[in-house]
Length: 131
Image (cartoon, rainbow, N blue to C red; front, side, top):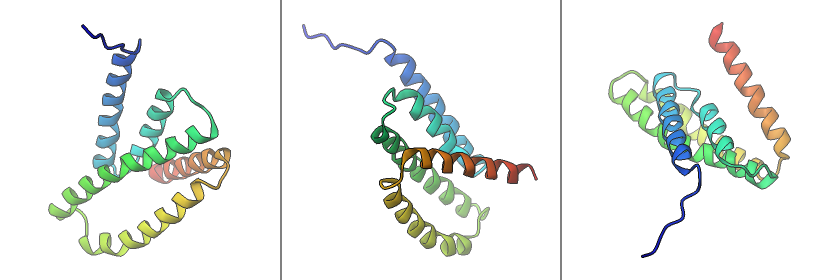
């Protein structure tokens, strides 16, 4: 009989990923913000590789995870008339263009700059939320 080797903490890591994924989705749907912060924390915690390439991959993975969260939240908000479809339309294309530019820059910038930029954006967002 063939046995499958399971990583020592695989179950804990799986549960951690499920819980943080749910938390990220909740924040995205409830506040419209914060899911990327939760996901960055979780992905960095689960990825022991701290190399430049792994850090870039972590940022890219966060973006890939936030996209479906945002699409689902947007669809629900617009369907319930809680968000303006007109405003979504006005911002969606420019935001997509900014996303393309950001994705290209992510591969070209030092990860220390990426981490600093991420921290600055989180701090600014936090300060604006409590004002």
